[in-house]
Length: 94
Ligand SMILES: [Zn+2]
Image (tube, protein in one colour):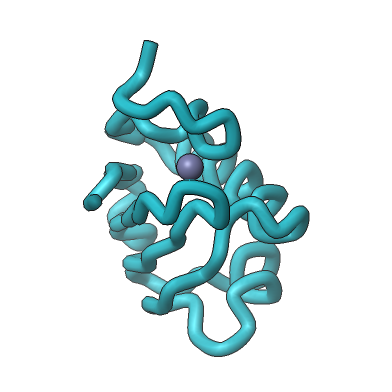
């Protein structure tokens, strides 16, 4: 059982420490799908004005963005240094 009972974002509510670029990539694809299906809303950050494009094409050296659940409005943040290949951190911030 996670921190929230929300059926929309319930699978994302545990903090995640990503240890490798593969972990990070996997999470980014999951977020991509959530955005695509309108289950997450992009709330701003380094993905710029076209977050979907940025997620599949070019992340930049640093990723730091927020998304929100469109059902319960809980907010999440992803922070990662892609250059160092050290992965990153995902967590609920509200
Ligand atoms: Zn939710």
